[in-house]
Length: 309
Image 1: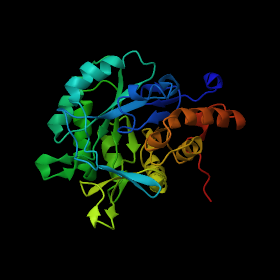
Image 2: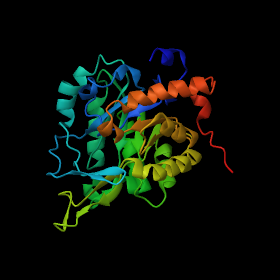
Image 3: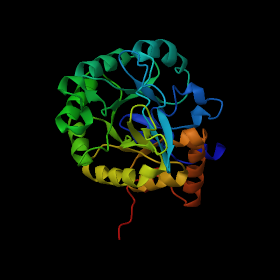
């Protein structure tokens, strides 16, 4: 990794400065320390920890993950330790990690989002907040915050009101026009958007005639969704002026380059971590070679550099 120190891979997400554009995706990297035997965390651009709720969540009963063609389906149910234990037990052990830590948060109401953000305010080591708006608003009959522009904007405003660190809003692909949601959260003050979250899917066992996960439906991720993610990143990057973080089926440095050409400033690697725990660090190494081979002054030179027919 010595060459990467000489190669300019730096990018910015609002006021947050990253040494390179490779981040980890929430829900696929635990609380980061779990991957230390496999990855030098200091070599990454940032780590995004698994989603944190106001109270602890046990998640869904098993089976809750199944492999699919070119990907996986999961219905973990956002299992986590809750914000109090996270601050005391998890964040305290991450304060000396020389990499920005971004905390993904989730809630069932506007008040919950605001309270979690307020509890995280001022906690040492937290460099940013990523807001999961794919959660159901229990006060609105379970409609996901991320499917209605006004609701997405309200969540963004609630979190921004309690946060002094950059706020990234993670967009759901399960909408008719993702650019409308992206513009709504930008207008509400989001510092960046990340996309896409998982697509809704299901799997059936033809022998038992039963769903292969107990929750029946779940979130599809992995290489299967990459073309959809690329398309949405391209569309959103054309619609907003804030940074776009690409997510969806990214496994290699070549994938990172494709997302950046489509308009992403940075990316998150998720499902690939289950196949290759070193996927994120491998991508950084590949990007270093790419920038040097292409004789680029900076990786930033390729952002939005897609050449159209």
